[in-house]
Amino acid sequence: MVDSYGRSITYLRLSVTELCNLRCKYCMPEDGVCKKSHADMLSEEEMIDAVRAAASLGVKKLRITGGEPLVKRNILSICRRAAAVEGIEEVCLTTNGILLPELAKPLREAGVKRVNLSLDTLNPEKYHDITRCGALDDALRGLEAALSAGFKRVKLNTVLIGGFNDDEITELAGLTLRYPVDVRFIELMPMTDSERFGQDAYLPCDAVLEKLPELQAQGKDGVSRLYRLPHAQGNVGLISPVSAHFCKTCDRLRLTADGKLKPCLHAPDACSIKGLTQEEMAARMQEAILAKPARHADLSAEHRSQAGRGMYQIGG
Image 1 (cartoon, rainbow, N blue to C red):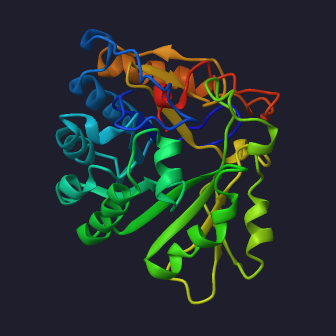
Image 2 (cartoon, rainbow, N blue to C red; image 1 turned 120 degrees about the vertical axis):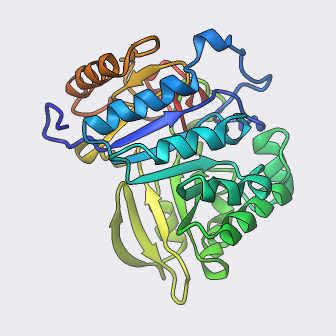
């Protein structure tokens, strides 16, 4: 389906839970989330109906997100059924990787084609600090499990944070020399729950180019500008939602775990599809797509996102 600005919407990001086994400082409150009742959240049947509705409108790519999607008890069933929906060509999943040693192979068998892993530092102490409770070794075991399971492309998502990991850019990019992975540096977004990060935390992705002048341009992959280190097995990607937004080419629709459709991550607009039939969901999605704004408001340390929710409540 084409929106009011001529953008073809072919990508649905489906959050299956707001819960997570980590507490990353830029994403979640320190004491975790306020658990909602099952009645307030989308059921598995509603999620699959939503995927079918989206596919009927031309959505071809589905990304499963959270929270942490792998803490969802029925995650394998959701992935398996979603991958079987007619019209869905690719099911991907974003995870912190902690539970991949047990789930990587079953996810691959369930039809998940690609996984993205969040990895903001290679320093064990800093990893524990930014996640408030995680262990770097667990995340690295998740990476090894993903590679062993045979996913066709493994990407590592690194949120670029000034004063935290800007001194690790070279080391993080160097993972593409050791592994057949892409490392993607993503600018920190000023979400509603990230007031602890000051102006210096918001680095443009061009800081990566300054640190690594040997990077060679490789074109684009969706919203990511691709570069490659000499002799690397994978690419270094730069995703710049703050310094150089990519709204003109945005092809996505988001669905939260409690059933709210968001046509734009950083806009307050959202409408509910919970309790609707598949046909009603499709109609509501059509309305949301046509209401998709041309672009979001400017983002900076002074200009916070208007999303009205944290990333864990929307889908990272």
